[in-house]
Image 1 (cartoon, helix red, strand yellow):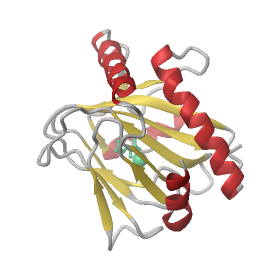
Image 2 (image 1 turned 90 degrees about the vertical axis):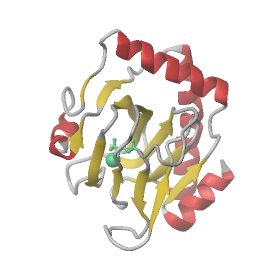
Image 3 (image 1 turned 180 degrees about the vertical axis):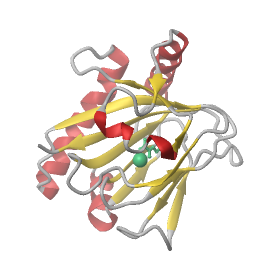
Length: 198
Ligand code: OGA
Ligand code: MN
């Protein structure tokens, strides 16, 4: 946790392999897969206002929103950790984060998400983006990396390519860092969410 906070302090973004134990990540992946098989997923951009504006930038990602209060045991394990992270971020950076909204996301083979910010001036309460990846045995060449431009506010210059490996967490300031999902050559799962302010 301290490492993550220090990185957020220095850079405004952070990534941490092994944030969630393998067994816990595997259970979340299993739940994600089962819910998808049960037809519970829908096209990104449907169902919540915020998503609709960015829909044209997405190819093929399907989502299932986590239901506050109705979460599974598997989700609760992760959400408890996120709650500790939320409080720590508030304590250190005075961000006034008051809750978390998140969804499972599945990108099919060939899926991508063009460069974007997660927060548009004046339209969003999203302050910090938090993503947990759920892909075991991800290999170099499988694509689907998160490309994150590391200069705040700029979609040029230095960037990181973060592989969506099982248990890896990424977080960054939602309104500052341009990012995209590169085309994946196989199905790609994650839990993507945002700490919000009022
Ligand atoms: C998003 C997003 C990145 C990822 O859903 O807004 O940018 O790596 N996702 O899944
Ligand atoms: Mn995004």
